[in-house]
Image (cartoon, rainbow, N blue to C red; front, side, top):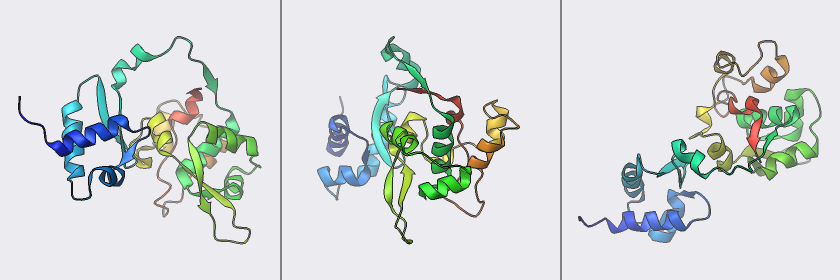
Length: 207
């Protein structure tokens, strides 16, 4: 058996013990800034490819997860699904496409007020988080999506969000659904608001 690179072993151990996804910088803080963290991550990802667990990167952070085709083995029969409300769906979509945004900006896009409860539900799910304050009078809180949002919806980054035409082609968006379409519409000059929200209109999210 060939000897395994000690940096690869150290990165593997750190990821296995971590309670949340780790960035390359997080790993370097534990293992050493002179270690080839990027090379170790690539080696581990290749080594775990096709196995029962795999190493994945979501939004610049790395973690081990069950291979998608085996997830059914670990799924509890007692799992409950809950329908995400229309307000929460639109709010999450707006944040994903326009982040970071304030509540007032979300309301301007939706055309209606956003209740604190809607924001709270999305924060409880771990999909959005406060991302500072807008430097304007009143300094309102602004919100952005989390690595947990990317993980839940199987996205590597927000660039993977599908567009409106993709949603229609998949039958996930009603052609006359102007309210949600308006929520997902983006400014072509705004790089931060890439495409649209496909998995959200499913509304079937695990509790």
